[in-house]
Length: 430
Image (tube, rainbow, N blue to C red; front, side, top):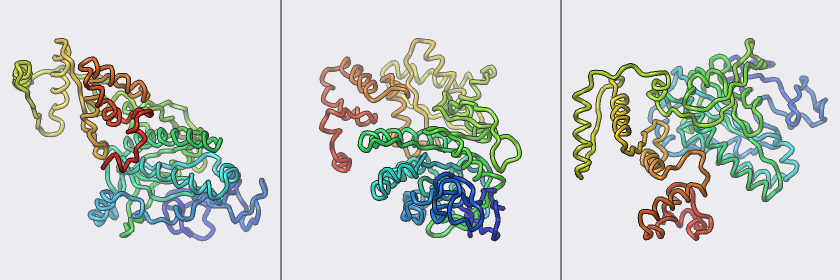
């Protein structure tokens, strides 16, 4: 028998995995009550133990066998799969800092019984697609399906310095997409579809990576178990994360400290935080600026070059300036000080940032520039976004009315009353 969390072979009768610390005691698939050895029925709710599963493996009958047995190569995007396979020999045996994500459906057994097996299977299939898309969007990997959810890794096998940030961005994206899906399910089936997510950051040692992308790894301490515990603690439609992950993402995200929790299998209380939303910082420089910057000196010649470029631009000669230097030499600070000078003169500056996790988001820096131009904020709904775009464009020229539907689509806020919004996605691409 292997551990559900890290796939490590277990000693017969083991109650905990000696690789990741995940509890292996069988629990009831319906009520999570711990079962005694050789129990045929749960003594709490009466469910047959044939439906039970070790903690962390899923929820018995609600699991979809097809999803649970799929090889990672089947659901990993080709560009990620190619990167893993090309460099897997260098990855094997490495110790890596990772962030582990668990996500599942709250009350899946009740929903499965209410909807029926076939309907529930279809709902879960689409749910899995949303989860996988959210993970892959930020170059994480879905390590396994857990019946009614997933376990995913950020930072392994593909190493990322910002693995914790990527996991948080993925969690927020998943939460947003699943919320839309839940609204559709409530309208169509009258059911409440809620999800929980948990994150924890720690060390793993990557083992053998198969040609099908199945990966063996050894989790250090409670890396996997704590992520799963965070998921179990989370309230419906929220994401909980440990202090270890919070320390890596503070400033980049808005977090609510919930205090220390006594977590089963962990001796010391664990600091727990709730992921609320995106923070004000997008880079390390933003974090440094929030703490207070030192005096800006010794860059007169560099600033003179930038001042000359803006003078040329104001004269009608467009300019592009590239700032190239070794890491840590002050490129971000120079750019910040120049922008602040321009704003002090009353000039409008729209900024876009190239982010490591944004490589899979088409036109991200330019989208940020245009969002600044139109005054679009993260909290704006689709209608507000359309109103801001239309207001700016029609004030410039009434003739832009014809291109508004295209702009709405580009910014992800299509007009539901326009025929273009009802087109098949493949037809739009054609």
